[in-house]
Every structure is written in structure tokens, then in C-alpha cells.
Length: 115
Image (cartoon, rainbow, N blue to C red):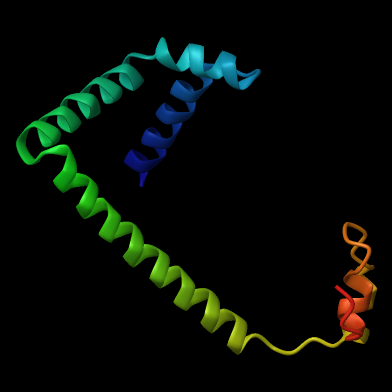
């Protein structure tokens, strides 16, 4: 447990080295971090080796199938979440306030069919 605590504290110190401020300042300071640079360089070399060995086209086709599978799983999860969610009536949701971003949302909730 103490080792885990020490690791977390070390990461907080390294994150503190990056600094606070805008995203541009953080990116600039991150490139000054030795661990970050080594990780980027190592990843770059590994990617080059994969492209040289297997070819860009083959890797793109494999990644395409991976993306299709992930999107199908997400579609199934969202469908199941929508079908198993409890029904909420208009009166149960009025204490959250009306949706002010879309002027026709009130009509949709009431079921008037105005789009």
C-alpha cells in the first residue's frame, strides 16, 4: 500500500512539473518532461516497425474491423440502456425545468408531434 501511495505521489510531482495554465503551456511543458518524450519516441518507433512489417493497408483494414466491432457493441449497449430505462412522464420531469435550448422541446414532451 505504501508503494502505491509513493507511486501516486511521484506522479503528482511529475504532473506539477508540467504546470498550470492554458493547454498550449501544458503541451510545451510536457515536451520538456523526459518521461513524456521517451514515451512518445518509443511509441513512434513501435508504430514504424508495425507499418514496415505488416504494411499500412493491412493495419488499416484490421483497425477498420476493430472500429466496426466497437461501434456495434456501443449500439447494443445504448439500445439496451434505452429499452431497460424506466419510463418518465412529463409531470415527473417538470421539476428539472424545461429545455430552453430547443423551442419545440415542450411540444415533443407533450406529445403534440410538432417538430
